[in-house]
Length: 329
Ligand code: UDP
Image (cartoon, rainbow, N blue to C red; front, side):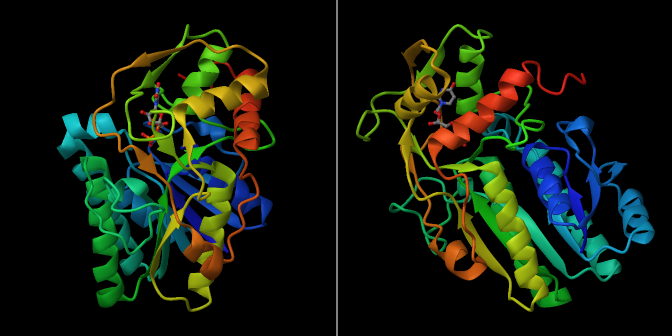
């Protein structure tokens, strides 16, 4: 397959590119490199440009015979989205509209779209099922939910078949140790804990210990980035085999509290990690755990790196060997 990966130089996108190459597919990447890293690409043909620019999209689709698209290109910081919603609606929604226009023009019929657990907002029940109510509590989640709805209508009108994958907490790094997470600023739990391990940060702040959870800190479902990548390829193959458009959750179905994640990281690294309780972070639901039964059943998805120890080991391998990330900027 010849796959266009939009946002392929980002954290999840770069693991997708690696997975496609490892499975002998041809890869074209379109990325504006605003948050992505050129050196995270282990292969593929890179076009540097913005999805909101129809000219570059035309060029990519004209110069390459694209069979299917995987779209990761988006801003994804929840806090920033609350401060600046229009930035998120413009970048995330408008760019996908332009991408769908180009796909329709060039007769490309399959897309796997990177969605999020943030489409649910505060969950109705645990574990979360795809059929549960969606009620995003921030513009980031709202932008992704809006795109899911746009995809539904584009399927009806143009026959573009889609799979939207709602990830829970993406984490870990490729087992080869060469690609991993490098955000600036970093806001995610595991990389921040590992910065403490690496001596780059004095302590980890635990955002809230008064939640209605067993130890008072928030519970999340951590899923390895390479397992996310494998689900995307399975979803593409399913569409190519005539599968209808669908939405799937991707998580491991098991929750870990912030305190448990810190404890497991202490065990994996052998380093004592200083932690301090801080106030709650705005907009954080107490518990987010996925039911991924539908993806397991319909996609045949089998997460390989589903223990928190393995997730942290792979993340640590990357961070230890790349203390300054990709060191491009
Ligand atoms: N968290 C924390 N301290 C930090 C960063 C995150 O306690 O420095 C908590 C956060 O409140 C949430 C969990 O860790 O409950 C996971 O946060 P992250 O930002 O990694 O992912 P999110 O759940 O927001 O997608």
